[in-house]
Length: 163
Image 1: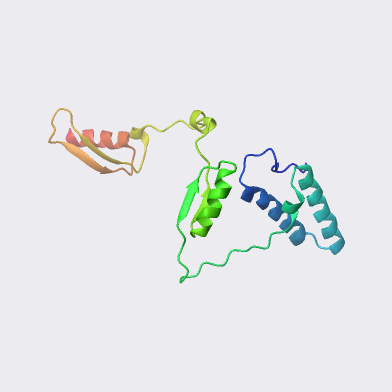
Image 2 (image 1 turned 120 degrees about the vertical axis):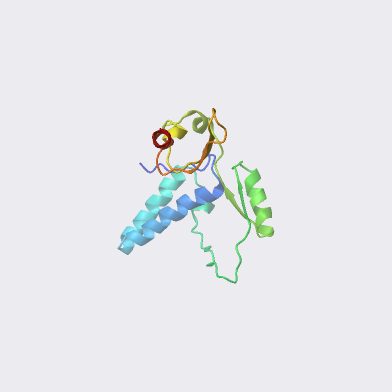
């Protein structure tokens, strides 16, 4: 219990770690009714976060809120990069100076490359695929389109029509 993203041992961006503090603090302030219980819950959250390696400066509530995006405020260009500790924080500050929104995205891991819980559906059993098939015997016969049925069902219908 009270095991959260470890500040020192986790390889996550600072924004993720700050989000843990912000979320737990928000939850304690919003959902606890009495002032005494709120104080107790906030103390419990801070103790739990200290146990997970969070320094005191990180426990201070952040009051930065994003201004709403209005139509006269154009969207900033976005840059998604894999997280590299130390480097991305510096690059993020540079991007902010140039009004570029930088976000962290995950990269291919060994697990994502090796583990595939679902088998791929063969193309002839997929629906909604676009195809162009030329007959091996007579190249003037072609069939192209988008399937609403599986390709194997469509082939059966084509063979029945030609007979």
